[in-house]
Picture 1 (cartoon, rainbow, N blue to C red):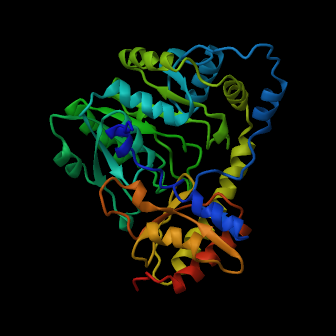
Picture 2 (picture 1 turned 60 degrees about the vertical axis):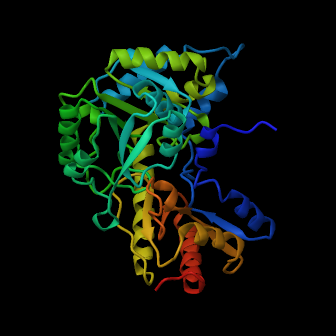
Picture 3 (picture 1 turned 30 degrees about the vertical axis):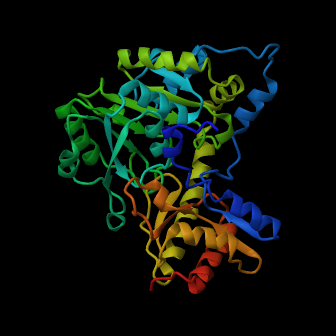
Length: 399
């Protein structure tokens, strides 16, 4: 019988989705599960998006331009201008979600065997995308004690070899919620300029910055305009994960011309998703004000409740809607599975994402979990009550 490829065998499973069979089995037993494992907000998608799709007078659902509808790209340029990011339609390729934007960027910018430095923990699928592109991830560890601040630039420099071709960040961060400061980004800029590296930046959570802290894009950094690749998505901005609309953006014309060839190979991004996304650009500020107010309340509740639990530590994130918590457990993968197949409290349990999958370093994150505070506070209260009770009786508790 033919065997699958080495690449397929090395492709990591999603740490967010690999526990789904255990969750399904728990539900069949009648256990209620609070899903804090995945960044699927319960916030309603803007009505502007929904109405545009419903009212679209489409007679033939045809291919769009491989780079995406020009009208959408032009309007998206106006959206970015509101964040002082000056790009035009030719600097933008619309993708099938932020995931494809990352994948195309990696295939465009790197050769097989090239190295990319990424602060860890990082979005789990970076491991998968880099594996698919035959790119080697060189992780650099950030610390929970510092709230996952950018590691010192001197540590980045130690990792640079002749094979190093880029650095990648997520800002605000998934899974940490950390928001990089101007000083941190300028230090990265100087390093990128010194070694002439690509700087890929996943900025899908720019709308969600808290405590008066400013969102600063890599496209605000002067002197590296040709090095920067901005990666974006509407999934979290408009709570439209299923639309599968993202974007790859760069002022580097050679990069964009090459990336378009990959976009042409998959023909076009989703038509209805683009229709909705273009209309959603008219979503009023009040929508985001309400969403941010809700996320701040959820964040404050979750972080405070976690830090009250015996043996638990959770830094307070400044962006996105995730946090990483350190728990008194022996193994996060074992614990998260145990929550689903061996534990319930008053007929309920909680589903978390083991942080091991957000690291590239083997053995890292063994006592950490990612929590997505994407449920209403009443549900979060029940979920964290389940977690607190579970920690009291978990057989692998370490303290």
